[in-house]
Image (cartoon, rainbow, N blue to C red):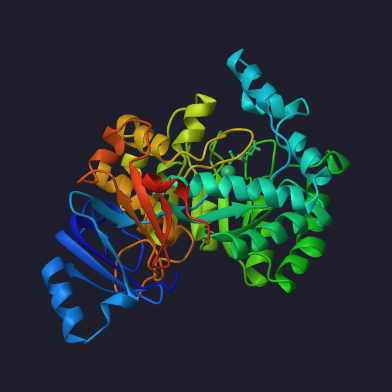
Length: 429
Ligand code: NIG
Ligand code: FE
């Protein structure tokens, strides 16, 4: 595995070319090269173009073909690896019983208010050893990889105490080291109010800001700070306070914003210069305008709305207002237990009035932008990391068309073939 690879004869090389978030109408242009080829050297994309041109260029450089692996992608589409920019992938235990309660008519917030929900997973995560969290994390990343995900964001937030929050973040750092996927860590210490702080939200925010955050930043365990800003969880004022402290300590910001009640989370994300605001089912028109103006990526999580039977976020309005929209799974044990990229594509295209082209931008270049990595991943451009997927079909249009089924045949990570459906799945080195 030396990261040297040529892919040629791709029916469509869907480059999604660009080094920054695509806003509004820019999202429809996928910058496709027909009969395309990519040259990857030492894990980094060196050139893209038509197959003939890339071959000529290769010969002219006098490079030794035997140093390069070759994939003939005739009859197949090639895309950037998907970027799942919002997940909660490290947790202990499961909450299948809550799914059954929701089927009987209980709402997510009702379950949370009577002591279930997130704090249930907190209990199990506090009890789990780092090794157990690591092993389940590996299984989950394997599943994500099979859907074509090459970079994933993961949040803490199932500890709500110093020790367990740090344990979750350390597990993510370890997963990032040992697994093919890149794992981008987010500190979500303010995900819910733990039993021991019941009724004392402000004191809990102080504890997170003064005790836990500095430890997280000292040990460089997170790139982002996030908060569940929601009625009966954390208010706008509490969110402003914690996120401002995080920003002062050098973290970039994300928010679970305007998910169930319209609180003004989108406006706050814009005010604080957050990289993304996520969920946004109830975002106000002003909030949408503010996000577009401030360049906040609107990260939409349709599988969560589907699972909670809530109305979908108004992605159409956001794009028409010139927002950059990203899509992600929100994989977590409560509101949305799925790592399925095909499900996200299906819901976005069939129920949110998002076109296939926009959905692809939302899961590639804009997912990268939601992680502040649009200069490194999310498109097939020279200079970017060689993270790609090869579909088993000739066009990207098959992605939502093959309903709920993954069309990914191969996954390339840093120029190495790491998943091949035809040859037993994940390739272990
Ligand atoms: O993004 N909304 C809050 N947090 C998660 C759910 C976490 C859980 O239920 O365990 C979400 O949906
Ligand atoms: Fe979430």
